Image (cartoon, rainbow, N blue to C red; front, side, top):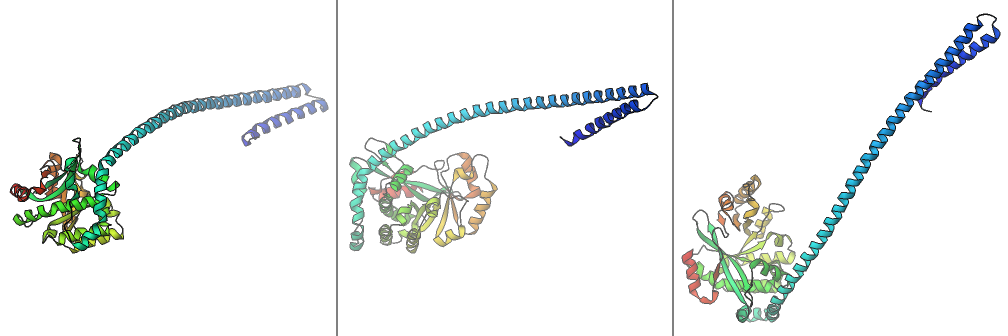
Length: 394
């Protein structure tokens, strides 16, 4: 029994005991018997009324409890129904996501298969060149440009993207870009070409070919513009290949002062994943006078002091990362100030619209992108004419 019920029991006991006492008094006493009997009956009646009232109050309390339980049950049922509907919707979304993922995976597999087919012939040509790398180093012979032989079925396109100096609004340097036009006329652009070269372990040979194409052109450009530099992309697989780095350094060493005009571009992700062999490759490049540029840079995980030790002098930042549509953030402005204070030159890349161009001067002096000038296709085998044309355009 609960504690709150004891007072009721005590009151009933007192009334009952008093009624018994009155009854005993009736039996014993000779006088006033009628009054005692009346008093006993009255007290018993009061006790019964009290018990009735207590039962009625308990009944009301029980009804309230039942109503509360019914309300809670309805709420629980509503929550269950909502949860059931949500679960069904979630299951449908999961099923649809799995279906779309299956389609995406198939599209990727088809794309990879097509790219693999297009690169298969190149891989066969590159195999012989890679196997003879050591022999070429010892004999110091000229690098055979194996990609020149693909013109019958596919054409390697060499492009230069102008880098504009905002203080003069003129071309200060160039970025090397490239693509391949397949026999069916489809062009594999720079991003897909480098991606598939990395996946197919062809990046070192591709980089060697591009450097070999760039050296004579850069030599002629610097003859007219000694301060001009050429930014050449370099893959992480190239840096960790000892034979490839030895071949690249030999090519640049034999090209007089061209090395001082070469800036090798390395992406932020590639630099973060370099091992000891890759760091050794960077050191070998720095020793011959070439400069390094970090492209696709983000503030997160960027150690400017470490970059200086590695020989990085240019930091390339994607325009869309600093100008997403609502102005340059203070974080990027602070970063640019610190970087300039440490004598890094910031290059804003892939400037595509006027908003990005308007914000460019707050971050960088050097800019590149279609908004300023698209990449120009260069016939590297055309001799001095191609370089002269670019020099005039600069």
